Length: 169
Image (cartoon, rainbow, N blue to C red):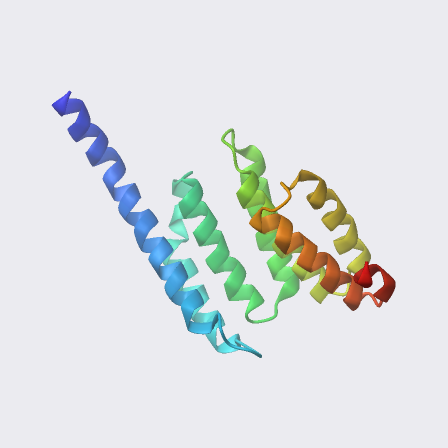
């Protein structure tokens, strides 16, 4: 038993340390600008540096946590620089990864789908965003964080699309 425990510890310890490091880096990045209003473009290079730091993990690890945060660094590197078309590429790549997973990944997919809605709105593709929101809301558990986010995005999308009656309802 001890030999097995040592083997497992040795095998998973490095991955656990990477998980903790990437989460700390992610929250350190967000803490710098989460309360700010206005443009946050000056943080895009920092997000890009963090993405490059963990980029190798996209190919070498199937750890969901590492994949999520690495892809979020890539998303922030593009979104903070207002490169919305590139954001869609990042999101579609992430969704492709999660579609291939055999483990439960719904919360990760839902988070990226919400981000895709934001990008579509920024690209003035409100009808496409509305369609995606409709699909997304049928899969979300009412009261979950992603459900509240999709409700917020539905309101914002209606306002962006000048559908004030829909926004009011």
